[in-house]
Amino acid sequence: MALQPAYLLHRRPYRETSALVDLLTLEHGVVRAVARGVARPGSRTRSTLQPFTPLHVMWRGKGELKTLTLIEAAGPGVLLAGEGLLCGLYANELLSRCLPRDFAVEALFAHYGALLPELAVPAQRAAKLRRLEVTLLEALDADPVFSVLKASDTGSPTMAALHPQERYLYDIGSRHFFEASHSQQGVDGRTLKLLAQGDWEAAGLARQSKWLLRQALLPLMGDRPLRSRALMQSLLEKRRQRAPVSS
Amino acid sequence: MALSPLFEKLTEALRTLPGVGPKGAQRMALHLLERDRVGGERIVSALAEALEHIGYCQRCRNLTEHECCAQCSDPRRDDRLLCIVESPADLLAIEEAGGYRGRYFVLHGHLSPLDGIGPDQIGLEQLEQQIVQGSFSEIVLATNPTVEGEATAHYISELLTPYGVNCSRLAYGMPLGGELEYVDGGTLARAFTGRLPYSSQ
Image 1: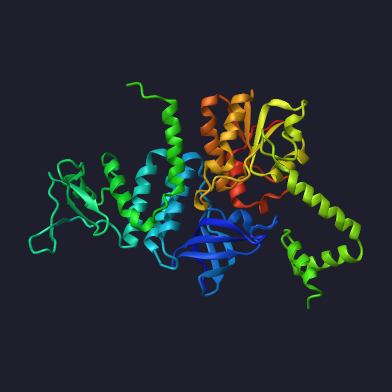
Image 2 (image 1 turned 90 degrees about the vertical axis):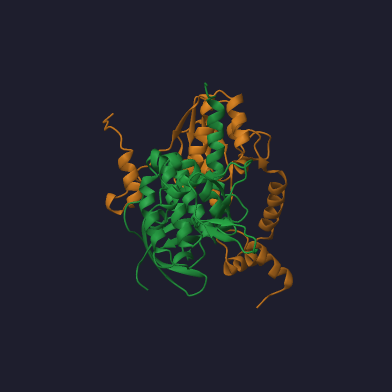
């Protein structure tokens, strides 16, 4: 096989000197493979095979578990630290949790590569992660459909367009919206129309896009919450306790 | 071919040791049975004793059969320095390297969200307790230079901010006696960003 561009999503020890790795590859999506001898003290690939580093890999094997035959760095890795690093771990956990194996996601791969250096910039992190989530949902055909489901007398629901002034809730099962009752908060149609145009990264819509994406991701993630997100939240919580808001 | 069921059981058990395959296990078993039965007895009693008595140090979570490990009960060590390591093996490596005379704290792991290992599993509550009770002025975050080790260092430094202690991190650098040409790109890049003013002292 030809050299395959890849990123390491996760690696765990396997036997004594090997590692079991999950790679995000350009043409094959998430691939699980054994990296033989990579944990040996003198191994040169030991430091190459790190997350957030563009790699070139080759493997053999047709089954679920491949064996890596070549691992090379394809460029300098991104040096993430502190919160940026946790965001990187979040991206990796999200992708390894949601993506099925051996399912090509070329657009997502390109997007992931472009995302990494941006995680080093604090102001961009949230917006860029939202964009990654949208790209992931689109790749798996699980992104929200921006129209309204309405119950009708005939029994089968009908479709309608979003109304700017109306408030809506998201239905995870059908991936459509439905009108919120008076007691429910929901999100207004104007905001949803902006999101439908692709304004996921707009600063003013951060809260709403986060709300919607989180719900859309739920069916892909299963019931276990993402640990990296819980980690970030517990840090935020600790920071909040330390600095009580003055108002 | 198997010699006997009991022999088979012994080689099978020996294979739980790291670096021991079927052939090695067989050699060990034959050696103990044929040439060194006394040595075998010694292994049995030492192993049984160690398994029964060795636990975690109440202060630093290092391995010890006492309430406090040797590093914690040594009065000549510096009480203002605390070095946080991932494993007892890391502690031994630092001790062998020499130069550090402060206290330790052993995490027995690192934060790894993708493996489901969170702050509860690496004894951070006990660490906070140590910080409150002690009078440390510097905490050396000596977790591994891996993504997980880095995340652990970040989490701990945030956790300890309210206690007003200074956190430091082991520097990334060039291996001693190494050649620039053969050093991997990541290490070289980190060594560059962490370069120090030249001093001929």
